[in-house]
Length: 358
Image (cartoon, rainbow, N blue to C red; front, side):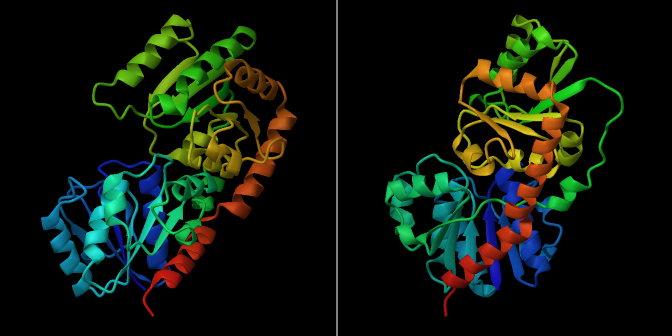
């Protein structure tokens, strides 16, 4: 098939990693994959299996850039594109305009729980299929009544399991290490992670806590707030903000326990990556975590916002190496069975085939 992926993102996050994995694997499976990106997009460097001549760069500053839509529409017709696939809400209207005068069918992936807006209601009537990355996202989409319910399909994000299963573990003698990962924003619950760490450290001062992620705000206000909280709780020697991590498998290989304290999570990619890396997981029972963790078998769940419970479970697992090992083994098997990249791509191909013109 001839497939165009559209992405205006100017930074790499979970959605962009998903797009790169999907595009590269589709190309490796023999599809003709094209990509429309913003100028100087960091996504370009991740598309290692997509031919450079199949990548077009266009200004995509807003959702209704008519000049860009016209250029992209001509590109779609010239390349005989069959599927146009958009991954970011601001790109949905552009993708819809692009398919208007062609035979291409529009497929969208929805990565978040936030509701779509009025512009989407007006422009997305001809959408062929919508992929939700979790059942929670699918239910959110159906509740908005923008798309026919039968057009919404749930396909969990998949990951390249080999990257996480072959990471070089840094198991030199050191402190026990508990970590979390995600952008530094309130929704990720990093404040709760820090408060739970402070409680654990009262009994286990030999544990190190690390937060991997960057503040998306130019002001750095979220990082500043976390640094202030760490000082106030007097845990600066034990809780560290280590910034953005490029090599997630290597980071995970240094952990004895992974924690997700998110207040809301549409899927929980970092949770799945931790399980694939053989790291036991504790998570708050966000929407995504409930779909990616089989309680007591592949990880532990606590109520969102319950810092005391989070600290208690962290401490229990720190003190119980056999239980950590059991959860890690079960989690790795679960990730291999449910969240492989091959499984995700095969299901996406099925969506493309059902949406493509006869």
